[in-house]
Structure formats: C-alpha cells, structure tokens
Amino acid sequence: MTRSAPPDGPVKVCLVCVELFAWGKYGGFGRSARMLGRELVKRGVAVTAVVPRRQGQRPVEELDGMRVLSFPMNRPWAARELFRRADADIYHSQHPSYSTSLALDAAPDRRHLITFRDPKFFRDMLIELRYPSRSHLRSLLAWAYESYRVPGAVRRADRVFACALDVGTKVRGAFGLAADPGFLPSPIAVPATPPAKSTRPTVCFVARWDRRKRPELFFELARLRPDVRFVAVGKGQDAEYDAELRRRYAGLPNLEMPGFIDQFSGTALSDLLGASWILANTAEREGLPTSFLEAFAHGCAILSRVNPDDLVRRFGEVVAADAFADGLERLLANDAWRERGAGGRRYVQQHYELASVVDRHLAIYREALHD
Image (cartoon, rainbow, N blue to C red; front, side, top):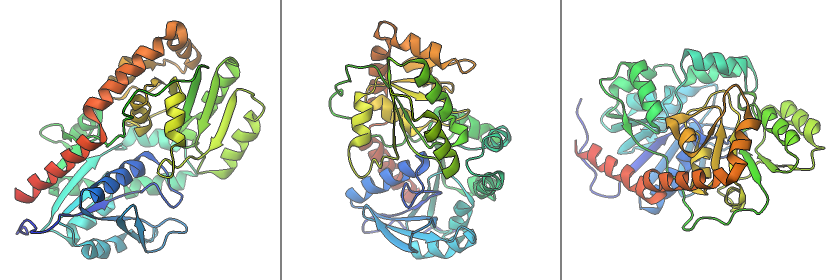
C-alpha cells in the first residue's frame, strides 16, 4: 500500500466515533472522544469527527472547534464519503466499529489508529440483552455496528491501542494479537488541589439510568442509609423506565436526582465529585468507566461490583454478590474512603492527567506519520 507523505502544515485528525457526548447521546465513549478532540484543537490540530446522526443534529456541525460530520443511522455506509471529505492525515477510531472499516476503505493511503474502550463479545452481549437500554433489537443493532468488519479493520490498522490494561488483554485474546495493544489512556482533567469534601457523608452515582447500570440498587442503598446523602446524576435512554424510577424513589429525603449534568457546559459535575466521598457503580458489567477516573481525580473512593484494572480493590471497595451496603459500611468506617480516594487521585495524576495524555496522542500521531 502506498502511503502519503507526512504533512508540511498542521496535522489533520479525523476522530471516528460511535458517539460524541452531544445531541442527546451522553456516554463514556463520547465524553472521551469529545475531550480529546477539544484538547487537540487547542494544540492547533485540525479535527474532524464523523459520527452517527442523532435527533436534532445537522449533517455538518461545529463543536468545541471540531467539524462534526454525521451520517444517517439507518445508512451507516454513507460514512465512507464523509471520511473522504475529512481528508485527514490520521484516522483515529475512538472504539472500533463498521465506520472504522469504511475509513480504511475511503483513505487507504492515510494512517489509521484504533483505541478499544469497551469491546463486547458473546458473554457481554448476553448481559446487554438481559438488561437492554431500550429494546433487544436496539442492543443487537448497536452490537452489529460495533462488530461488523471489525476483525478485518483491526488487522489493517497501523496501530491498535486500549484505554485500559484489562481491555488490552481482552482484545489480544479475542483477535489473536501477538501482544496486548498499547496502553493509550483517556484524558482526565485533574483539579490542581484536592477538593474540599462535604462534612456530610456523600455518595454519588454518575451514569445513564439504563437497566444494565442497575440504578435501583443505588436507590435501595439510599433507603438503607438515611444518615448518608445520595446523589444520582443521569437519565435513562428509556423515558418510561427513567420516570418509573423517579416516581418510585421520590420520597427518600436523603436522595437527590438532579438529572443529566453536562460537564462540558459548567462545573456542576466537578463540584459534586469534589464534595462526594464515594462514587458507587452498580452496573452488571463495565469496561473502565470514565466516571471512575473522574471520581478518582476528585479524591473519591469507588464502590463497585466490577473491578477494572484492579483499581476498585486498590482505591475503593469491591462488592461481592451485590452486597453494596456492606461495602459502603467498610468504606465509611474510620474514614477508610479518604485514603483510598487519595490513592486513586495520585494514580490518575500519574497515568491519565489531561495534558500528558494529549501529549502522548500527539507523539503517537507523529510516530505514525513517519513510519
């Protein structure tokens, strides 16, 4: 394959995204992609993002200095022409999908990188189907989009990365790679000084109110501990499921349900994490949620059933058999949460701090262009 020469001017990067934390779709994948794109723009990089079009989104938008091109969700093959229009030096998939293969088809002479975030294989899909966000059909369609032609795209890509060590190991086994993909973390804004914590024990939940996240377990925990303040941030993709949860738990005086908080439009989420002692995650399965890393950055301990990269065991409390009340008690006893949260903050500063992660991306882009 003939490769184009490295550019003389500013590098042009196309972020190949399954979502972008805008236009009604708010998840960890999109948050990481948007944060990366925004910071690359600040460094003088020309950034285009190509995404499935959401309700209310125009075919061409501008977001945080990025040009955003979108294609109809029922015609994903239309993305091929958008990748040609992007005319980028680097095409960087923020998690592989059918779009990754289309970008390779559209610009075979350019450099193509992939970062795996939360790959879903057979066991993962069984869980997704057990707890569908909206319907079983939507779950299957999403899985098809994130898996069709992906093995071939992984083989054709110039370099493959993973945002977490456990994800890398999982990808290596699933795709028969010779070694784990390189570790390429998500950029996390770490407050310059440790936030001042609330004087009242405060536990927060930051996630979509989807069935797989099992938010009702968080609400039941609030019922069991009236002495603790609980704040559940987010909303569900299924409006009826969301409304039912709010009706069922509206009477708990120690539970706050502020809805979705847009972290790109203010400091409300950072303020909440700064005041919180503990972030609780009740999901049945996860990759490495960005909410964990953001909570660590703000000095929170994590209470969770899942333990990606062994971080919850080190900097929080791993829950067995959904015994969240027992785990919470252990974190609150003798302020155990405080030291673990401080350890998590140091870990994120070392491995995920925003400026150094963006530096790492730029270095990888330069290496790829000169290979």
